[in-house]
Structures are given as structure tokens and as C-alpha cells.
Length: 188
Image (tube, rainbow, N blue to C red):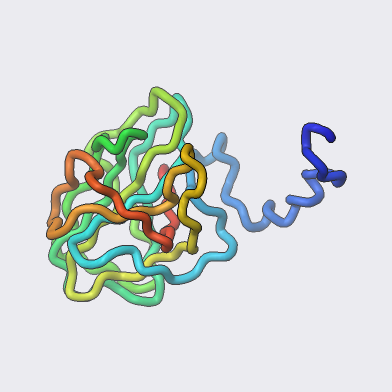
């Protein structure tokens, strides 16, 4: 057995298709994403006023200034509040965007919102990027589906928490519930 386990091929050749599917080199255009650009579709993020948070690996030294979620085929219908937020590995709030109130969020639209202040990561690990929309119709988001954690040390790729949320992110992710739908998020 080798460092690559039982795989006998050249990893660069085997993963070459990702060169056209991936994003720019993060040393050129800083970003972190929780999913690749392939195999994505519409997913239901959460019910109105419920927060959906997704696991996002951030490295020591990263500075996150904004978060991007992409709506799917369903636009936000009559939104009254929505925000994005960033939480640390323990689920404590690090920063959030301004409440977008009644601003439109059309179908198939990337929505990039700036955090109220840049967040500098001081320890590499899994953080949580969150979205909450209070609206008559909550938009679907571009994402995928994921399995429930099996091993003790695994984290949920997506989870929901809270209810009746409006324009302010909760101080912590309290009593998270596993969610199979995993929205794509890009931190810049």
C-alpha cells in the first residue's frame, strides 16, 4: 500500500477534469467554497425564518469579508428579512451581513453580501456559513445533497436552527438539526 492507498494512477491525471470545473487559484482570487462547481442543483435551504448553516473549511490567516449564496429556480417571494452570517467551529457568531429587508432576490442569482466587519481566521478548521430568509416564498439555493454524519468526529454538512428569525443572526447555533440539502457557499 502506498501513500495513495490502493490507487495506482496519477492523481493529477485522474482529477484533471476539475481544472475546468474549479474556481480560480485562491492565491490569485481569495475564496473558500464548501462544494465544487459540478453536480449542483436546486435545494430547499430552510423554511421561512429558519437559519441554514453549512460547514465551510477556513484556514488560519484567511480574512473573510463577504459570503455568497446562489438562488436556484425559485426566487424569494415577498421577502421581509434575510441575512448571511459566519460562525466559528463552536457555533458562536463571528459576523453577519446587514439585514436585506425587502430587497429582491431573483431566481438563478448569486447574492454576495458583505459582513459588517472582516473576520480574520486564527485557527484552521470547519466554520459555518449561514443564511436565513423570512419571506412568503423562500428561495431555493444551488447546492447538493449530503449524508448524515456516521462517525463521531464528523460534522453535518448542513443543519437548520432557530425559528421566527428576522434580521439578526442568533449569537450561537443552538440545537442544530441535520439537513440533507447542502447549499453552496463561497467566502471571499
